[in-house]
Amino acid sequence: MIQKLRRRLKLTQGELAKLVGVSVVAVGSWEAGRSRPQGSRRAALVALRKLGRREVVRLLAGIPEPDRARRSARRRARRRRKAR
Image 1: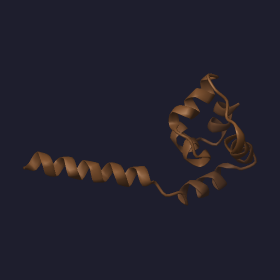
Image 2 (image 1 turned 90 degrees about the horizontal axis):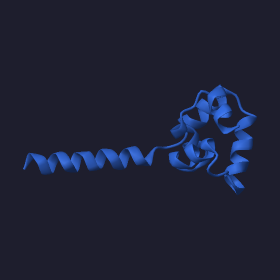
Image 3 (image 1 turned 60 degrees about the vertical axis):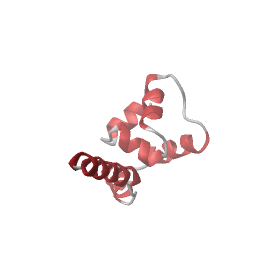
């Protein structure tokens, strides 16, 4: 069901993970049947089922990406170390 929802909304596992508030690995485990979403994560997935692609794109646009900022800071630090 989760993979079907993701494909209908044209989302990557990473995007779905961001919307639901879990890791990409968790989404992969759900899709493979190794685990199931529980509690608030399950409720978030049910809520996504009621949305269309446009609403989901708007939601994604409003979610900040702190991981990207951390990664770019790490890259800059590595480059500085290599340059020395």
